[in-house]
Image (cartoon, rainbow over all chains, first blue to last red; front, side, top):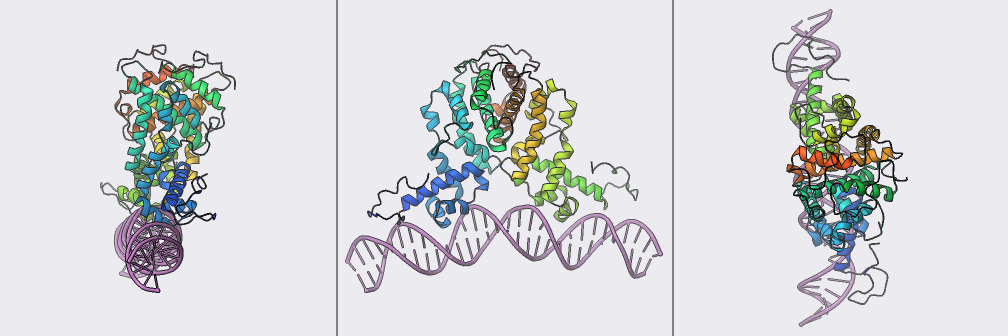
Length: 214
Length: 214
DNA sequence: CCGTGATGTAAGCAGGTGCTTACACAAGGG
DNA sequence: CCCTTGTGTAAGCACCTGCTTACATCACGG
């Protein structure tokens, strides 16, 4: 995943498989490793030693290139994220983000920003601020889906549900939610949210309580 | 369980306000301090030194009386919690828990178990297991509010929203949700959940998107 | 009175954390 | 060639963590 995506051409034309001395390449190695570990363990539990080890470099380089663990976290969040926000129309954002959280299209390079957020809760206050910032961007878009005067609050509530579902499913692993079919979950949630955000394109939003097949 | 069963009369009949050498009393002091700090900072960020300091006793006593930080956490969770679960009828549980999370009736001695859960996410796996257990109890009750065949999944989804709202409001402090009127939030959420759990007593569940006054 | 045991305390230990420093190796230019 | 500059590395520092140990202090029984 992380390795081998830009190791083709080195400035000195190295043909060997060994990674020669290339600051940009090791920088990216560190960023990739940090992205993975932050998503897997959250900010606090991902140690700089683990990150450097997974990147295959010395941890001192991490501080030479990024200055501090927090700065590295900032670069990770700034790099990976926001594609989903930019490329997804508002009325599809909730479902796309929800399906991303439910594990669909969790390929390499997928946007795991929300996952990182969930696993980093309770860390330092500065981290919480960074996470609040990302949440704001999502909530702002979701708020446009309601014409009510408290549309921004409704956007917050929709985002809350999104994160709560991710919390229980990805972080806690609570059953039966953790093993539930993404389609079923999505249908139930989007249907219920139709009351809150009338701009959501409901599959079959009006379905009764006994509806959805498992 | 262990506390409060022999507190009233001291063996030496002490009438003074000063706490004499009383193991039960210091045990309770430690439990109270731990309860507060776990709720404020979560499990990991609440250190045994802070807990002992807030209790006004030496930290060695913490280990003498509880053995380990994890055991202390277990006693805290076993002591405070579950009153809400036992004393609240199923159809009111969601709203009561939601209002508790929204800050109403947050007096001393209130059940902050869910708050502790939220702030302790990402800690050690054993802690996550304990939190999953508490979540199971809530979700089981909520699941009874739907007659659908996937009622347990619907219960999980309702609990997810509850925790997600607490996450954004209490832990992250995201506006406008953090400062929103509990009544408004409750009305919006319970209304939307009416689609999911038909057993919820909706205030005015059928309200349209532009309804609720802010 | 002193001894015994429960209670409280200061100091320390082993391990982990983010971060720094002193040094080794590889290029490029004089 | 040597010297400078950029890159990689091992070792260590200062601090914090949960937890332990050796010691003081009080209540009570002889």
